[in-house]
Length: 77
Image 1 (tube, rainbow, N blue to C red):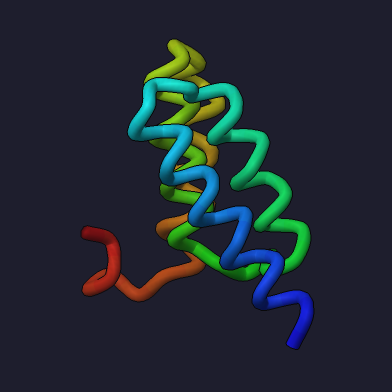
Image 2: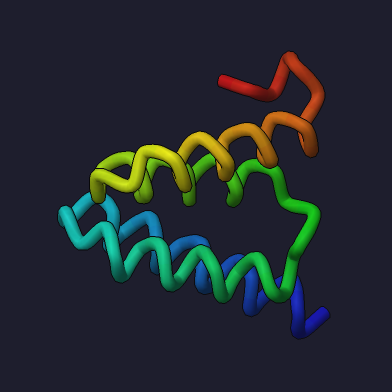
């Protein structure tokens, strides 16, 4: 149970950082969350948003593609 909680904590922290415009910090938090929850396609999509906002378009495309492959199409939104 400790791992999902850690992933949730890092995911929440990343969302707060992203909303504050701290994209690099958000990306780092979401990367930590992915360590604990590596099959979370939603986290991969969030990482793609942070990478895009940071101007890292190629990396963003890769993260989004990976996230979309992890999730069913009805969860892409």
